[in-house]
Image (cartoon, rainbow, N blue to C red; front, side, top):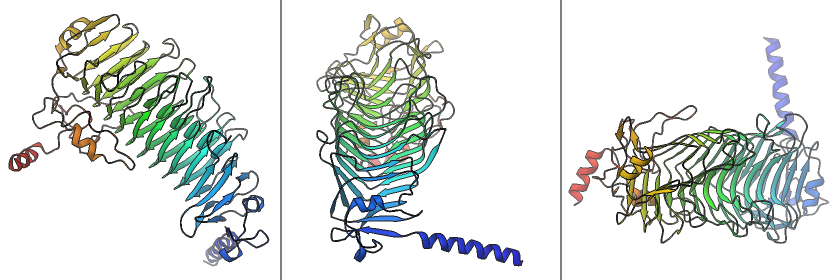
Length: 555
């Protein structure tokens, strides 16, 4: 018993000692660098003083809200940085970095940035990142805990927020970026990257979360050898999520044929992209300019519950570039594309492999319960699905709705070779009864003719799929939802009516590990695990019988 008591006393002393070593330092517009900095009355004045101070673990650094401080925050190992950097008083403090970076942590983590505005001189005159965490330590060193919350970043050339590394699989783990507002940036809004090697195993970063963020006016840079102008990009990540975010109006100055895209991942594993909106993405003078993308070397990842509209490129893209790691086992489900594919032949859903012999191409992809609306008068090159190349194996489309207007095509395959693809139980509807299906060099003007020539939409020897009006409430009229996203607007326009032929007309299909069966649709309505689910991204509200009674009495 005395021994236990002594251990408790020692533990208490240790905790008190650590607490005593944790200080809070203040920077004020009325401060002085000759002061102690340990209270608002004794505040420092400059960022230079904050950079040069020797901190202890768990120290806090606070800037006076509604004031601007010139300079760049810079911390480098082995020095200890403050663990928490934020504002005090009312509003955010502004860190004005001019042509340099706003915040840079080199080989350091365990840092929280919160409630600050990092401002550069503008993407054309600035030369750096807004916030940069960079790890180049030798060996496989994962620096843990980076938290960025409620920050505003604007006016930087390279990126708004970057978590990067360049030494094998050294990188960061447990990264959280939330409630960020990023705009007026040159190259990328929010991004992660590591040292790329086609033959390497493992990833630099683990457990990366980006949520509830607004990214726009990522202008792109006029560089012919680098794509730019993307909103949120995860690469070299094992386990990542991007959700509840909006990206738009970006990519205008891009020159490279590859990128930009609103929200995407490449060279990554176990990525979830969900509950986001992406719109008005431009290809610039290059290619892409799409909403969402799983790109080269992505595995075991899903794009679900997203809304893409009015983009130059694809709403939802699968692309395997020629030197990527193998790409397989991905899912696209419960998304809506509205008038994507304004240029370069892109459609609502587009699949592309640069070299079908490289690492097996694109393998094991499920595309189900999506709704694609394409009006050729609004988006001249739009349509339902586009296979830009061969090299696709084990790709399945089922329970999707493809709704076209003004002769936008349903399916276009640039080649009919190296396409191990199956379409089952999808609904196709062309206003005016003018559908087109192109498969290689041949085109067909009905589902029956397409089925007979290609063996698509046949299940166990029986015809599947249909050419029916899905009777959606107001397709093509959703437009911009805005930030934060109001999903009820989509439900009001893309729900099927009670007697729609897509209600209980789909096919139940198991999903492979590590994915779980979907439990709700894009509007958040619960899904019954039934043998005949509804088609499309938004289902008819359940229970149907009670809904029918309400409609009857309201009529």
